[in-house]
Image (cartoon, rainbow, N blue to C red; front, side):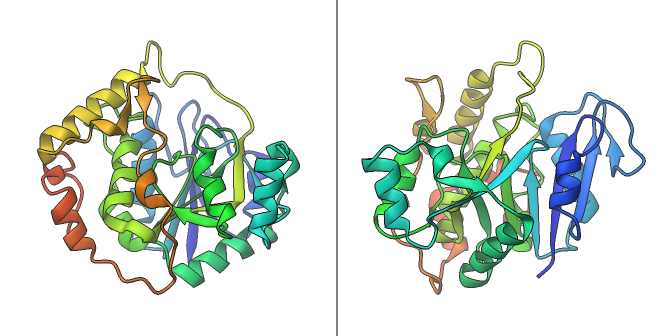
Amino acid sequence: MKICILTQTATDISDYYKGFFEGYDLYFVTFKTPNKNAVDFLPKSTWSAGRNRLWEEVKGKYDYYLFIDDDLVFYRSMYAMVPQIHYLLENRYQKPIEKLYKEARPGAFFNRLSHYLKKYSPDVLTVRNLNNQENKRLDLQALRAGNAARRLGWFDAQFTLFSNYAAQRLLPYDTKISGWASAQILIYLLSHEVFGPKAMGLIDLGVNNSFHTGAYVTDYKSNLDCKNMVEEICKSTAKDFKHLFDTNYNHVNLYYGDETIAQPLLSNEKIDFAANFTKRLKGIETLMDKNNLSF
């Protein structure tokens, strides 16, 4: 099983990444200064443009493509083998999240990840976002049921693993609307609506952003960017997807898809991607005209 790691950074990847991903194919682009080891130097590029350049470099060469932020720290649950214990500690006893996870060694992290890849053959996968616990109810209901993994709705782009099949269809990332935060909406929308249980989130593995770089660009308003994307999705599909946008928080709906996320994951479940796409998202190909949305 071949996997590559893809990230974009200002000048160079961190020493932590160089150690954590030793032995793996790690590709990166820079946007502030050139680097002889980088795939490319992309000054003033958007988030989408950086990831798309990386995709161009590795397209079709791997079984899985892992896109990550450049500042992650990787963790694993200390109670992964008994999810209900994790649930009790986090929910009933309100144990802080940092007391439930410990920093993972590379071998332990990738062994656990490989376990899920072999068992479920997912097409889209992410891990728990330890920075953002606003929608932790979805994780807790899975843990309570004895599951350390669940179906995906909304998820942060900080850790996104695509199978080759999914990558060939979901990539490139959108650059029409802005090339920034709104591009992720299309990813989790298609992951949820088309791939169903083949899009999964792991709860026993997690990541934390070790630092924040602030706003993407000067005067960038992610809420308006995301709202524009949702409007374009509604227009292209002739369907009401306004529930993708959370008017209370003036941003994306972090609970998108919660009505089906509670359904269990089955390792041998067969999914008709083409039927799902035709029924739920037909027309979105006019918005995503650079993508091959044939299933």
